[in-house]
Length: 150
Length: 178
Image 1 (cartoon, each protein chain N blue to C red):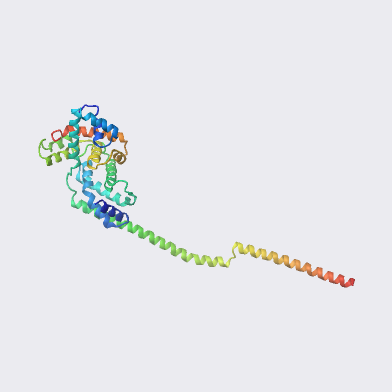
Image 2: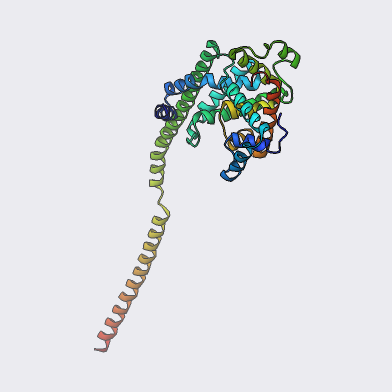
């Protein structure tokens, strides 16, 4: 095993994890260090062995289990989606049933603005009635007075 | 190939179940190799691969394509392995048998390449789970240090030092093959 101080940097360089400047230093070092050159060859060997290993194939029944489980999950997802759609449809139906009934009820009772308008009309009617009475009295009075004077 | 996988991913994201089944067929063996390398038992590896695919199925719409799907799923698998360890409270234990049991099954150094690969499998089991994980994610999965750090939720410097020690240990054990 290499005891060289560059050993750990050599691994990082081998993995392509050093920046260009530090990588150049390691490359330069490799031209003069036999221990690091040997370690680099061993790193390549490890990479080849571990990188291409396939201990054994996954069993067919395990594969079938995965596919079946995905089908099951998908079915549950569809069920949940269908449940949500039914709930949504039911909500819309309930709203559609309640809305006209509420509209009719609200049609019987005057709205706030309608009440205010009616109140204003009442006031103005009262006011007009009062004014008319006053005008009539004044006309009568004037007529009477004028006639009397004449 | 890349284009057809992208199309397959988009179809699966749109909810096309058949497309997802095809993704399973394409990636299952590779993920199994990774899971087996980390866990050391076929049945455990199969369970973890299944959980990984189910998690992928549920979360595929969140996949944005910033890494390859394979790397993304390897990250999910790594977390599933961590969960597996936590559930069994055996995260610090070496798995797949004791060193003596494993070494007894190894062939002699200097044999054919196929034997060498079998011995790598056996030797990997002797490494601690932490060393095995970083080694597999780097060499088998081809992840960068940053990606490994993210998948394992550890600092980048820890990835570098664990990887260095894992390789040194493997070099010592596989000296006849290197």
